[in-house]
Length: 515
Image (cartoon, rainbow, N blue to C red; front, side, top):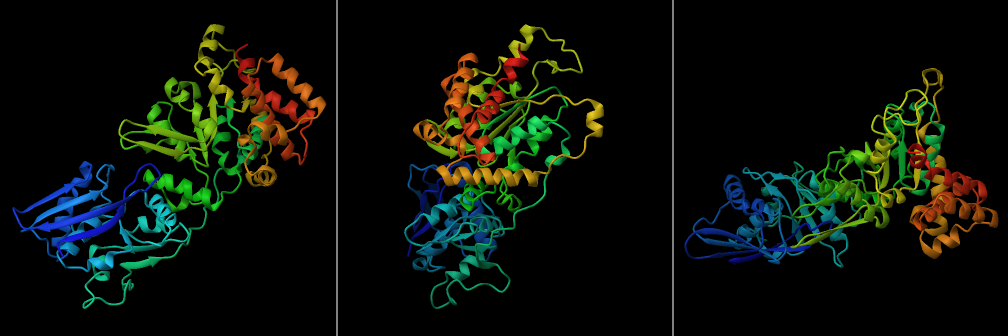
């Protein structure tokens, strides 16, 4: 048979659309043509496939006109993931393997010149796409990628180390052994979904001396999914607090872990040690808007998507480019980012918790009791003015982190451990999930009015605070969400005046520092 079809998948955002690799061998001037909107690295597969087949002792039909079509033709294809299906298509079209036995299988993998299979990015996204199919499909992947894909339940993933490991399974019936027979050397093996054990350890909150108010704010933010802005002089412990925030968050669910790991796999950053762990992404303040929110052609996830279900820590917050900071506004509200280009459009999840840290002024010591600030009021206002009102409106908790005197720093006993705080956070988070099915930060509209209902005294207090501080409607609602979280931490079904009063104080730090 001179025509063979092999199934594979492309990557488009977190989606993995099906791709049919069509290989046709014909008489004529010897050539190897690859069509179907293939990127440069895909077109280079011609040389890799040719060398891999020859070095593996297989026949390459050099005297034929070889045409490879990657269908659909209008879907962009990139990376070396199509090397293996192209090689199998050539072997099937030339009769070296049984083309009929390829039905019900999908393949992805980059070939070395010796025929060894190399891992490809996006294996988890591909496996998630397979799980969504109505009928089961078996997938063959290289080492490294197969282990990632096998994390997805209800999928059938096979690992192959060499091109010959795959070829042995699809020889014509007269030469083949039992279907999908494992090799003695482990070159061909079906992988069972055995997730790695979650890593333990990490920075502990007990390392931070003092800062009781900031630690309390971290606990509230972790329990309700709220964003957090830490303001204080240099060396006051803002970065230490932020680096320990992920250790306070409630445990991840399996579906959350799969989605987070799929994004990391898409960017080529997945590691088994990250499984079921909430990551902290901390880009440098010189990063561009595209690096922060995603972009490129084809679109790739940015730092906000890599921090999905985790923490995005932005140190030196006002030093980021204004365009990068303003690009955070929509994802902070929606939990998703849509990257639109002329040729294609991709959507990535971006449900992260923002933790930002900044100095109150250019010299860093405005409001400090230990050193005098040398900035003029105009310089302080200009520095804080780098952060727009709409962006600050979307950050629920604004917390001052003052510098500790030396005697308090050296003489303070160890603080509360992360595990103790995490237990309270998990209990409050569970109350919210049982009540409304989402964290308090995600409450909106009538649902917020119903589930965070205030008694008369608390309502009057919040109205007075909103009027006096000239809050927007968004600021008022966000203070109400924080009050709901504080009530959950206290084990209270209703939101009382004390809960509202504590929530109100978390929205005045920058205003006070600039005064």
